[in-house]
Image (cartoon, rainbow, N blue to C red; front, top):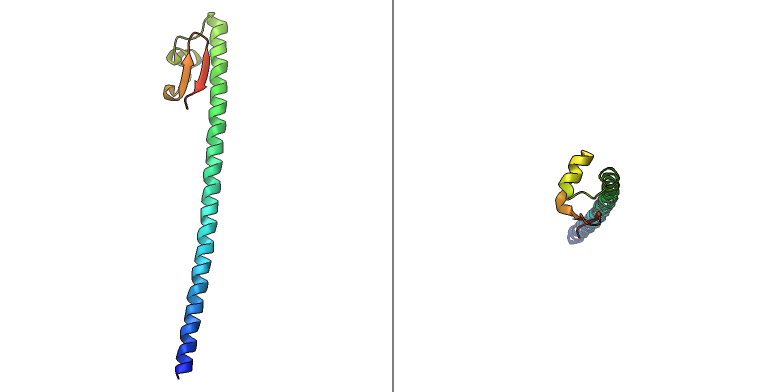
Length: 103
């Protein structure tokens, strides 16, 4: 009888160990997928910011071509280009027309 109980206990321990290993594997896979999605979102955000700043630089040049000067500020560029600009993320120099992302 003792041998049967010992065998059952060992079998249960083996099953629990296997379940824990599988749970860890699933957890690692979920973490990997989550990290891949975060990385993809970061890349998309960077690409979007790059595209946005290039479009704004073109708008600055269009303003200069039309007015013979650079916009006094981003609000003036916003009105000229009929766009909404998140002014808190850009550094703009009205003397040179340079535009950059704040870091």
